[in-house]
Image (cartoon, rainbow, N blue to C red; front, side, top):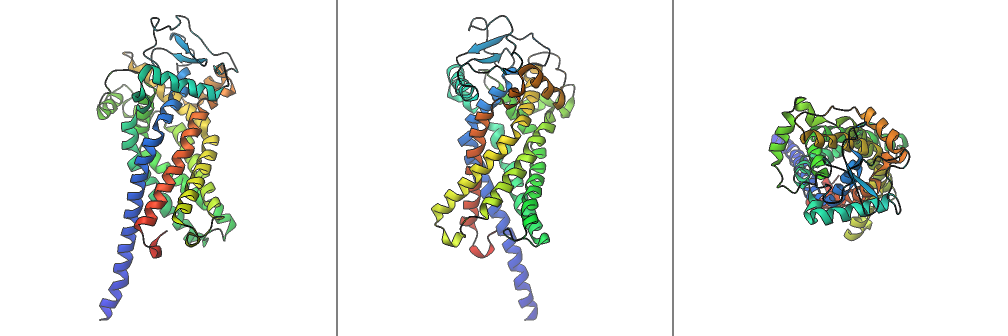
Length: 370
């Protein structure tokens, strides 16, 4: 009898841990799918906007097409459909220092709107979903690892520091910073090749049927630099994602300290609160990490030029790319695509955390919910 009694708590603990893990996995998978489908067009607009000056620095062999709104599009490797027949200039339009090829009417907002119109006019609605396949394939494992790791690490740090819901001011700041940054470091490193593929697919404008994702990965890894090609831009990717995640979770946890207990809120109010927290936190993180995102996009879209030639282009370091952007486009160049990025990241974070928290509330009983 004593053995039976002692085995009951152990069985309950095991089943509870399994239930929590399963709820986290299911919630993150569903949230990933919803988020990717909802905001992917803004990701494509952002990538194309950021890569419009993505020719290797010092190389002026590409012609440039200007379209309504004053945005310059290099040809042929970023926008292969540009040609003299379609109105491209045979001369090279290089941005003057400090201008960052600004749109003629209103800067970043006008540039974002102009790019969206350009994509719709030249590629149709399908152009807004370029790179969706690697996005979906990447989103599921990335967010499962990311959210599960964050919850586990944050819980561990709270337990070790004795902090619960802000009763320890120092720990309430450091816990989300460490847990958020650590979880994103792991998930971004694991999915770096798919992030690279998504970026170059989104930047491409070829009308040909897309190559199989796995075949394209194999072709990229077969270049002279080998598997390291798939990790091009990993430095600025981590420089973007790790600080973003740390800022994001710090904002979320601080906002949560001021919300009403779940027992005093209706389900709809909880959904609205989660979405608001995620949106605000995502906006803050995106603002601070856009320069690293621009450098990452430039480094990775240079691969498109290599793909159009028999020999590969020289790999540029993140620092050289950053210096080139500032030198040729001014400080404003490192904020290219910021409107599209913030417009995408803020609601994406809101949708993702709302789906994730709702899934946990739906699948977990109150006594085991984290």
